[in-house]
Every structure is written in structure tokens, then in C-alpha cells.
Length: 303
Image (tube, rainbow, N blue to C red):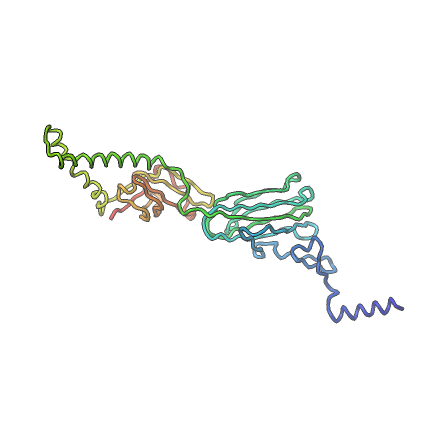
């Protein structure tokens, strides 16, 4: 009798509150606030790109889990990058021997930047110091069998607007050229102070006097065309490329911010850094860099 009353009372209580149809899962399978019904139906909210959860640089490690039989077979995270830099991601699998699967990293167009499968005897993985630009990136973990809790974290190191590219030999040569120009400019000075014309060779030094006009002639070659040569092409992981253009630079009147046109593919590029005899430029990822070849010419209209 007591059992019947208890069952009836429980039915009324469930009917009033509407709580007997679902159970909030507090077990291991409830890490993502999952909900299971009496029919064992599993709702996985972050199993695709549209449901991706945020992964923020510098935040504490995040615990999550994958469970193939439980229905949690994919987890997606999005990462927002506000500027160029180096991105790192780590993942630590609690029970690597009990799960099959892997993890992928994609750019905003879902092009794979990194793919790796889980190993039964390895629990820690790292994607370290990968160069990225401004945009949204996606991190996906998946299982093809088994289950395990895992931990993820990410970090970011911004870079300077100028890439750290070793191309110092050119500035060194430029310094030598500058020293030679300084020596040439110093030579006329004894001519003014000494006023001694001992030899005809000293009177011939009058000819270097127009030398200082060579700089204005380079700068004032208005309406003229300066043509440089692409000597180095450095392709980046995001599809862009950095080029070094010799035969240009400040001595030719080309400054940082000037725009040149790559002959053959008719692409305009802006100079991000100019030295005395060369410049650097960045070609965007939208340009097919496969058509870009060493020794290609870059044309400038000097004003």
C-alpha cells in the first residue's frame, strides 16, 4: 500500500514540475553541460563550425572530452587573431590508450593548417609558433572510437610589422658605398682651405664637385622609370610572400610606402622597407605566387 501511494505521489510531483522526462547529466559525459533523455539521446552543441566555442589566448587551460559511444564525436573551438604574430596550441589527452582520433587547425576558409592523429602512447601534443595574420581560426578535436577527457590551451606572441628577415649584407655594402661617397665629398674641402694648386691632379679634383648633385639627380629623376629585380622570394604559410627587390632603394629615389608594379603579372606592391640599394615588399595571399619568379622585374615611376 505504501509503495502504491509513493508511486502515485511521485507521478503527481513529476507531472507538476515536468522534470521526470529528462536528467541533467553530472557524470563525465556532462563536461559540456550535455542533456540526456530517458532514450539516451545526446545533444552535442559544439560538434560543427557554427557551434564552435571560444578559445582565448592566455586564458587558463580548458577541460573538455570526447566520447564516441556517447555521441560526443567532435569538438570545435574558434580563435580570434587581431594582428600578425605567432600562435601556439597545446592539447593533453588524459587516457590516450582509450581513444582513437586526432586534431586539426583551420584558417577562416577552413583550409587545414595542421592535422595530427592521436597516438596510443602519447598524450601531449603541441602546435608551436605558427605564423598567423589577422582573422578567425578554428581548432577541432575528434574521435573515431573510445573516449577521454582532454585539456587545451593557446597562446599568442605578436610580431613587429617588419618581419625579422636576415638581409644585412645589403646594408653593410651600402655602408661601404656611403663611406666612399663621404670620402669623395671630403676631398673638395682641402681644395677650399689650402688653395694650393701644386699639381694638375688637384685641379682635376674640381670635377668631383658636381658629385653631390648625383643625389638630387636620383631623387629628382621625376617622370623617369626605375626598374628593380626580385632577388629573394619568401613564401609564408598564409599564402602571402615577401620579396626583396634589388637595384632600387633610397639611392634611386624609392622610399618606404612607394608602389611598384611587377612586370609579367601586372601586380602592384607597396614597399614595407627600403634600404639604400634595395627594398622589401609584401605580396598578399590573393595573388598566385606560383607565377612569381626570381629575377622578375618591378617597375617604379619616380616623381
